[in-house]
Length: 450
Image: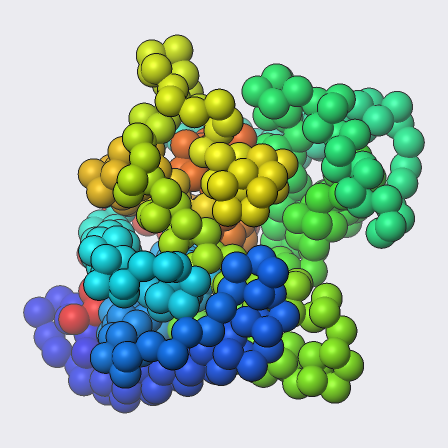
């Protein structure tokens, strides 16, 4: 139902909500099926297991994963809703039940953590129900903006490329060698590390999105070149897959906004089933590695590990982050390295987790509410900055924001993975067509799902 201007309209949303619930139920069931028959057998060495749970916990985990389908947006009205959907599919769904299988803990011990995360996710959704702010903008001409963006991409790409002596190596076999060399040549916390992270996570997708929206081949080719350079330097799959990822989203954001929820869940179901049947036919281990393991399983696995470890060990208090100067950090390694050492036997294992799990490691349950409040404001700010700037570019950027937050802490995302730079880039984005310029510049009342 839609409540707008004091009137009720049952119509389409009333019919689509049950469909949304059914599709999400099928997605959760499909993911649990592939977990049982493909992922758990394939990744037992990485900690995935399949326990024979009491039916109560099996049903509860399923229902908690399904619960957000009751309020998830069916139609895209705000760019940040793209990130919200990604967080639901990739984080909330697996976190609600995977740790029941992977932890040596009674399920009731874990319930407080999963319930808190679900509540935080519910509260985050209210950011889409509030009217947007009117943010004063600088008046930049399109030609000035384009010139500055081209210069920014070129300078950042050259800076990153210089770290490997301007070599061009896009071979698949040398990916891990390039990653090791990149870690040695670009010190963590250095200016170059921030340049590299923000180029891949903000500037490159932003340039591609602007190029696609304005049909500028110059910007599209610059973005592709930046991706090739990033892949050559550190084997970053993110840099290499940005064009594919954004092109896959393009029809959803441009033509499918009114039915985004049902369509994206259907695509997720089809993708998981294709991965399973492809694996059955070929037994190729890389199929689950790059699909269900990478997108879903590891999110639930690591969330459980973060909860288990930091429930019995001191919180980090961001002592491995920007509060290191004010904190008596209790560990030898950063949180992600500490989890890798304890659960995988090596501090070199990349064990970053999503924003809520990382926040639990930092400050416990209060940290989960803090990052929810901060992300709430970030969503509102990005949505507000998208006024008079079209929908495509902000939605593209929010898709990357969602993917990053499913893997890293919020403070890491802000500084190293493009969130702050994304906000700055949105601030300077000019309207590119007359229709956008004529949109109202002050927030107007919007239809709010009942």
